Image 1 (tube, rainbow, N blue to C red):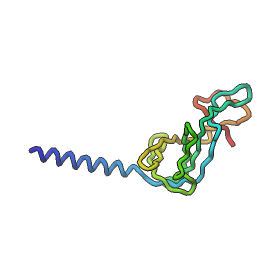
Image 2: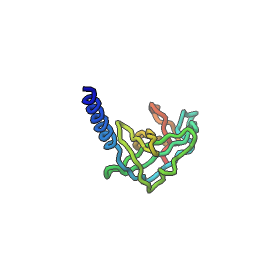
Image 3: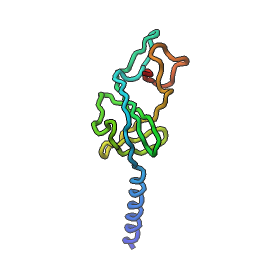
Image 4: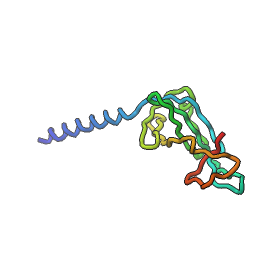
Length: 135
């Protein structure tokens, strides 16, 4: 009697792991834009004050479509495996991608052209989240 539940649990675990693996796909890194000063934290008059935490906008080609995701680094570290031209494992979730570095999943949110501001004057109204200057 004990063997049947163990067999069923083993089968369920195998199916779950198979579905989890289907979530990982390959994306190609096309371009990386580095923002070494970080995001605009606030403005003093017409001068942007940056937070000093580097961010990287990564252009991915995934499922024949281009996406731009923002990877934030507190230390400035950027994985060598994520250089332009390389393929990496990714998983798309709501509003973000998980970029895989080995077994580690690193979140990177999707961004658009609206996630940048002119570096010469503060936007009106002020954005809800910190932004980077458009270049």
